[in-house]
Length: 372
Ligand SMILES: C[S@@+](CC[C@H](N)C(=O)[O-])C[C@H]1O[C@@H](n2cnc3c(N)ncnc32)[C@H](O)[C@@H]1O
Picture 1 (tube, rainbow, N blue to C red):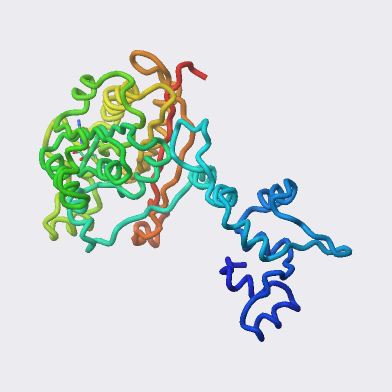
Picture 2 (cartoon, rainbow, N blue to C red; picture 1 turned 90 degrees about the vertical axis):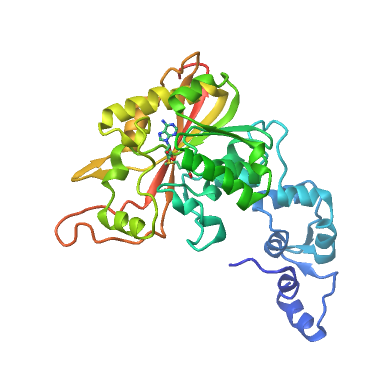
């Protein structure tokens, strides 16, 4: 049953009263209402409802076998701070991770969510779409709100066009964004200035350089969260011909850069993985504070007829790995980011199973003092 408005609930109080209400056009506040109606009105779980009844905060009446509540008493209870705390939730005093109430925390522990994108014509998509592989700042905002509190520091070692920095600015976090290409670096600063507000790029640290070198300059245990999406080895150079043609026709880049330090230009997959894990991810983990999290947004992909399970390769290389200068990485979960809006392409049809990869993985590691 969908949520009823307060007015609808009032007019549905119980079988006899409903008729009376409709005829009179108003509601007798002394009306009796059933437990399930009261629960709906208060929008509380059964557990919370039973708790306030047990504590006597909300009075329960008994008439023979029937239990009931009084509408006016429910309305009075709804004006109290006790009710506000119950319905909106509170931030637990012991919560040092984020600013979420229990109610907002729980849905974020689901092992999947749907990607939230902008329409290609949106004003906010004009810089983002110039980059061949951006992620959605809204999706990253969700992760940032879960894994940090306001004012905390976030690191993205593959900054691209600044989606992480934009999410940080919107949510009041401070971003360090490292990007090799001068073009994407400049566009990420422009993006904040144009899309979020003049002067907002100054709240963050945009570094134009090679992460393999720049991370070494960052202080150990100085950030609260690492979130990033890595370049995909030589995969952009092997993109679907249709996709490449489309981007070329629209005057958009089909690769990150020509730079030899660009991890996206390494042709050997093993060499790419080694550099990515050892020089970037483990160094980012060194910069991460103990007990804090790292979220890596990655996709599996095909290389001709081979299916490369990039996410599981990363998990086996990184889980339980020792971090330089102390600590270990411990896998905490793998979230699936569903891209249900993507168009289906008839890749193998009618001969073979060739997957339309319409999801990404978010690998969530925690930095811990001891190996578990
Ligand atoms: C998947 S993209 C990240 C996109 C970003 N999440 C966004 O939404 O804009 C990977 C980025 O890593 C950059 N990159 C590649 N090699 C790098 C390196 N050695 N150091 C820093 N950035 C590098 C590429 O130029 C590319 O912009």
